[in-house]
Image 1 (cartoon, rainbow, N blue to C red):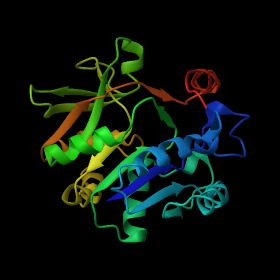
Image 2 (image 1 turned 120 degrees about the horizontal axis):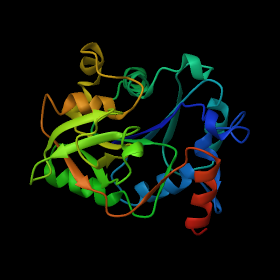
Image 3 (image 1 turned 45 degrees about the horizontal axis):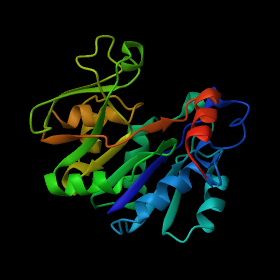
Length: 242
């Protein structure tokens, strides 16, 4: 299984911290955000290779970080240098698939979230379902829902509908940026793009995919801290012990 880490954003809401430094390498306690994620995922023993998808501006930072890690980590440069020219998450995923000729099951994650639970639970769930899968959590705030992916599902967790940043969310079940693609479904990313799925938000591919095949949504077994601005970064530092 490959793990794709989406890290090609420019984090403009975290300026000045991220003006010349990538958000996923900011420290929470004594570890970077990426360290927290990779060290946890690696404990499951399922990942043969980690792929960090960077922009051109920050690729050197990620390569230096990867050299100091014991895991098999490849850093790819998507060639963009500004927030205005970014490819978007779904196109970055396809970029990495094409560049590295990836042909495997994939765990696809955003590189800017901290979790208070292990992602190994999610991988176990996906393997049990034998389908592509996402996670879901209950979000009571309507304003936050309109900025997120929102999912409807049946009694067996099968996704019935998923939307990204809808002005009229169908439910209060929000989807964090952690996705499992089966090998077969990973081959459909290019088709999703061709069919007009959104490419900025990573969940847009899943929103399209669940109209083509079965995808399940696991209830998240804990909390996540989305490092989106200075306030959320400071909150995560207080909540996560070193």
